[in-house]
Image (cartoon, rainbow, N blue to C red; front, side, top):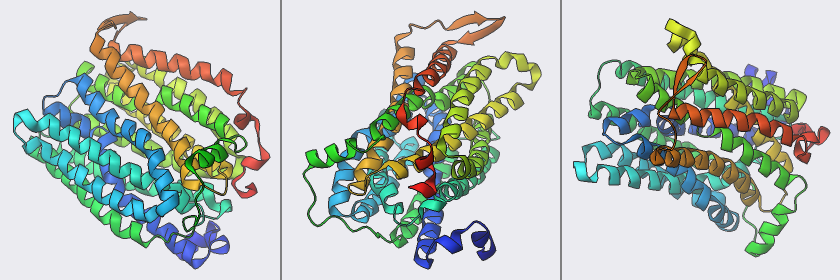
Length: 438
């Protein structure tokens, strides 16, 4: 991060040297830590598990499981973080997460009867570790990032780790161009595990500026104070509805591309890369748009955009021979929307949380977003397992699959939820949403 760039963006004039150093450590740490996350969510883990011969429904369950478990245990972790200290929980969490990724990568070397158990154990350990880290992450950053810089900081943070992720998945795409062996996937997952180790070094350097409360209030009282914060509950409800319709879409895209369109594994990873390039653009635009216009217009644009993206994916047959470039465009746009909406959510959340119990209040909102995304993935897996959807159906001359039925439902719901959002107070409030106005 050059001094001129920092000065140009206002980081020098607003942030202290300690804050700038801490923000830099946060960004570098996340760049290395993201490799495992990208492997799990951008197609690499999906094709790895398919390579091991695991069924579609169970692959969806395993890939949704970490998010679900994080949702369940994050709130207890946040209560502990507010009492013991954020980093006292975060550092052991990072160590656990690293062990989980190593277990996941080594699953392919286990005897056949033990492979799925190793995958399952890896997912569970990753989830526990990530929950311990995530519980205090926003609370750790809260006193470090000046309010006037929040949109741009989160934009820069997420742009940086997405660029790192794009480089990693580009390497994956090149390596997987040939019919890769299981050991090739394991080497790539091993690189992601190494990134997780490096992340620990930089996380340790971030100072904990808000010490834990000397006399913490009882759990019931802490929960009550968070729930009573103005606009907090309505905002959480919005976040839940948004995640329910969009959270599982990338995995379903991957299933269509793998099982219906029968694309090569390297192409699926390249499409995951397109999602991430879109996210880089979305973080850049979203960070500036939030700081300039507030979060309301960003949310509304993203909402309509999600509906448009899902419906466009269903109309992929119109692309004809340009199918793969068309799919790349859909992935790119979805990445932009996911990124921009996440910047708006993070910025709004830091503006809404009460001064006490920061870990708890940020975690509860994050849990709802993760839980809704996980529920959408698990419900999709359950519906597919029940075989209640037609394997093939026609729409305007195109033959669509059971996966497309799920995407069509989500597209309809996300557009319907736009109507209900006009009634949610947090979408109407305006001036105090500006990050500088908190």
